Each structure stands twice: as structure tokens, then as C-alpha cells.
Image 1 (tube, rainbow, N blue to C red):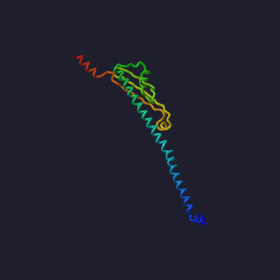
Image 2: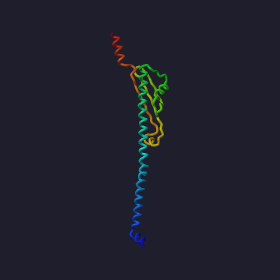
Image 3: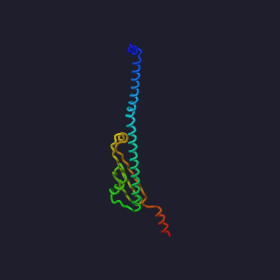
Image 4: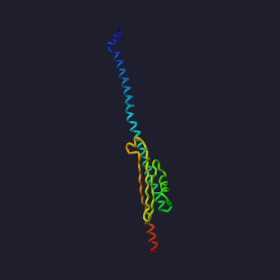
Length: 161
């Protein structure tokens, strides 16, 4: 009789339904974080990998230009002579992280010392490769005066006196 009254009053059913709903809400909240993480984590990881790749790219670009300028200045000052392009390419490869020197040359004529270097990188990174391609290339050219105006002015003054 008491059980029948309790069932009819709905206290047991409401309590049980109320407890089930609370458990359902708690389960739903925990699961929602997992579902959100499935979408957010790959995006964040992709951005981190892209930033690392950009850092490597910019580092190698700066190193190529610095190596090239240093080598051209050494040629202009007579500290180093490059007999062939392989020697030039070895000097250009120094300090590069992800790029490889493909071609390069230094030419000295009466007025200028001209240099050019081409480097390329082929990385197969799935996320980054989708947006920017898997092959990157840097081409650099530089000209340096072989004749220094200050030396000509001094020599002119010496010749006049």
C-alpha cells in the first residue's frame, strides 16, 4: 500500500528521473569538451607548425643573403677567390637549416662583382603543403662595386701632387 502511494505520488519516479537527467547533463558537458577539442587542437597544431616553418624559412633567407654579401666582400677585398661554382655553393650552404643550394655563381668584371644564388626546400608537411605548396625557392642576387671611389679620389690626389 505504501509503495503504491509513493508510486502514485511520483516521488520515486521524479527522483529517479531527476537523477538521470543530472547524470545526462554531466555526461553531455564532459563529452562536449572532447568534441570541441577534436576541432580546435588540429587548428592550433597547424598554426604552431606553420609558425615554426616560417621561422625556418626566414632564418634561411637571411642566412643566404648574409653568406652571399660576406663572400662578395671577401672577393672584393682579395681575401678569397672562387675557382669554380662548387666552392661558392659550399660557402652559401653554410648555416642553412632546411634549404639546399641548387645553383650559384660569382662573376667579377671591371666595375662590379655580381653574385647570384638559388636555394630550394622540399618539405612534405600535410597541413602546410596544402596552403603554400611543398616546394619553396629563394633566389638572391647582389652587386658590389669592385672599384671603390675613395681609393680613386686618393689616387687622383696623389697623382696631382
